[in-house]
Image 1 (tube, rainbow, N blue to C red):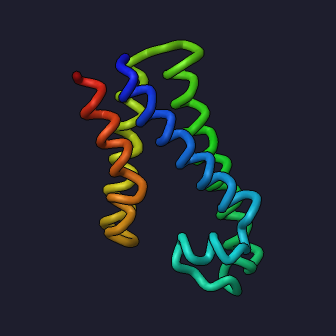
Image 2: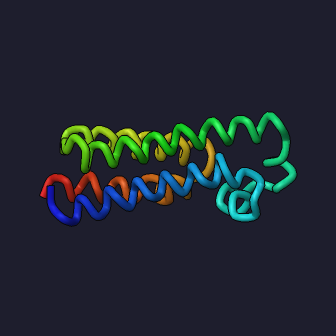
Length: 118
């Protein structure tokens, strides 16, 4: 894998760790409210708060799997699968929730996927 693949994939992992932080540890913060375009009051609702925390753990595990595919058990195939998965989820989120998700969540993953073929 090239330096650029390592760099961009690491940035994707960091992005997912940031999402983990927002959703799981800073669930009701101003930053979380801004990033997800939700009122703080909505984020404080117990059902929403629980869903966000669970979703955050999921996103953190994706970040961890990216790092595993890069550094622990290097695998370009698994890295490509993970990037494809992230892109698919971003497309779904963009179509069902907010089109900005496609670029925000899928843009860097798409760049990483493209770079992985060079």
